[in-house]
Image 1 (cartoon, rainbow, N blue to C red):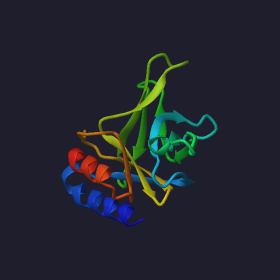
Image 2: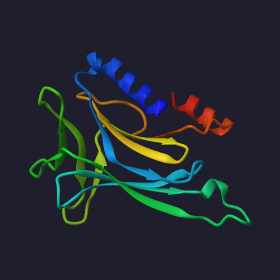
Image 3: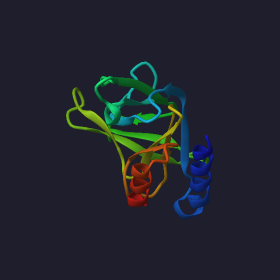
Image 4: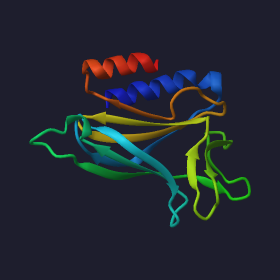
Length: 167
């Protein structure tokens, strides 16, 4: 959870530059492979509630070998408080002042399309010894870089180089 606290502190520091950020930690957590990786992700709206849902599959793919077969594990992480505007096909969250911030939008045909993050939003997947916490962040201004970011406490050389290249 050190990583989560560090991330939330960083987001608090950039708030004056980009307005009030929205930070929602999913109430759902997952336990998966300590050194696995995210291999698939998708956003959806839960039809029973207006919650935005991130469906994520983790795999032990990087460590599959003779004695270790491939195993994929799907998980759902809910982000409550979403407001869906069907006319603009946009999903909003409200900041502390009640301002709407775009986080996602429907793409394609509404009957069989998909939901994608807007440039203002990012999802962080924080893994600590395999325990996953999903955090949705959004600001009123577009942000550069990746939209889905996996951070873990695996301090291997590969992860260190990947983090340096993302920076």
